[in-house]
Length: 145
Image (cartoon, rainbow, N blue to C red; front, side):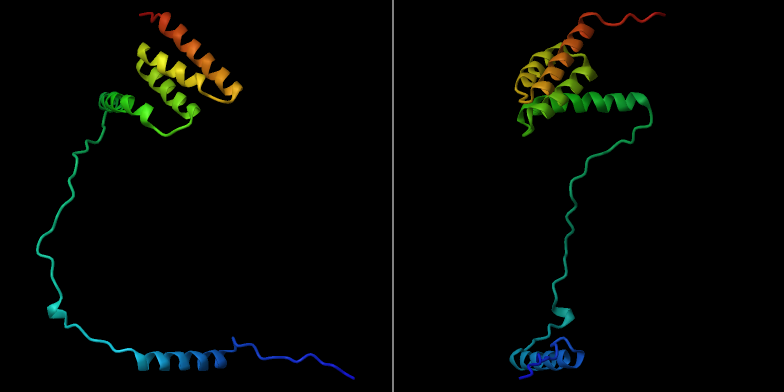
């Protein structure tokens, strides 16, 4: 007995698809009713609320950039402990602040954060960075005039 596979025509044939879609849309059209709203009855906004804006000054010289940097550092300092970051990332922030300000009071929180770093090699590097910063702050470089 010769068995030949039956071939079926795919539904995605353009004509078949068009028929199916026409049937669906015909059924949908019969069940839907629309009400048109005249354009003149649409509400028109009468007030415009502007978002509050801060005056942003464009930095044109180094002094202005230094002022912005100092302000940003002072704003960042109380927020560091509130950041949801890994100990490594938090240490990097403390180190950046320490190097930017030479503020010795940042050494203790940076050291405490370094101790919380889980990876021993990264913790060792952080502790070395603390030691280097202490050495630098204890013996500032002499500037020759």
